[in-house]
Image (cartoon, rainbow, N blue to C red; front, side, top):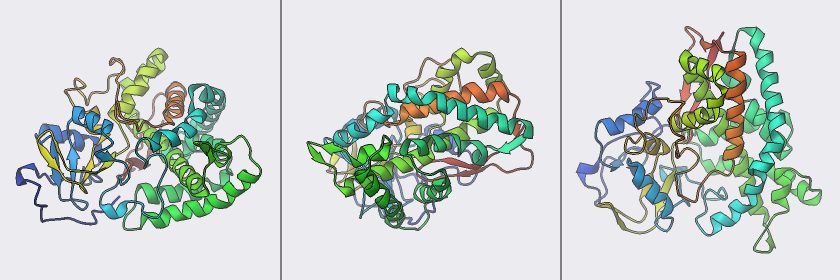
Length: 406
């Protein structure tokens, strides 16, 4: 769990006391485990639409869905160049591309990645994803139980990703450790951890520049923008982001979804009996359980934003959950309704903003296959009694251990 490294008791001069509500965005439930309920509770207690917390160095939190969507489009004010709170959690010596670039650079770098994750490209992977999912499930089924995280969630999406980048399977655990230290840091310098990832990538990138294959790292190593080859620094920063995105987010989502389904037999049986609802069910689970805490943005210039004076240098978090849980956007937002009209949620990037996850189609495919194959093969599963479910907050919310029985 991220620790609160700084609690700034003194308010900046431009922050009115009436807009203060202390809230730790990395540990909203304060140990109770109900991360998403704690975020929704901000609406119930009536916090200001934009409020200041003294946790994590002091920063703003946006708590209205339409404001989050509006700010996501205004990249001249709400910049992605420093996305973390407190400020010392931001990368300084390196950055992750394209997520830490603003337009127009963001679109240029993103366009390099997107073809590898297009619907056509992912359809070519679908058979292999399904074969791996079925093999994992069939191997687990006779055992009568498993730790879902270690034995499924950290295998399916990560093994597929390792194929995409053509990295050895045996490197998986070491890379996962580095990803965890980025996504769930304590007081480590993120620059130091990112340097370890880039040090790992450097000889691989050099080899693929000399002897390119068809994998994603080779594509980046041979990439060009505006007619010039990418620099080694750019290649390393793009590939580092690919590793972090590919190793954590889908695995975290699968864990949170399985935790919900283990406690809801009616939803499990609905999926098994009515596979036609699975595409909508997948979107509803993504809406209801968004694992990404942010995004965080850096205020580039003073602005009066809906009556709140934001100052250059301020940090603001615009939680995707607070878009998805806003009752002004979704009726009865905490209810999981597999037949809800297809929700246009913010879980892969705030609606209308440029920072949409380029890997979202791959993620949706992997989650859909999980929902198709697991509930019909192991329908009646539940939480193992007397075994704690371990959640961890951070830049992503994850379940660290999920003991299931059937």
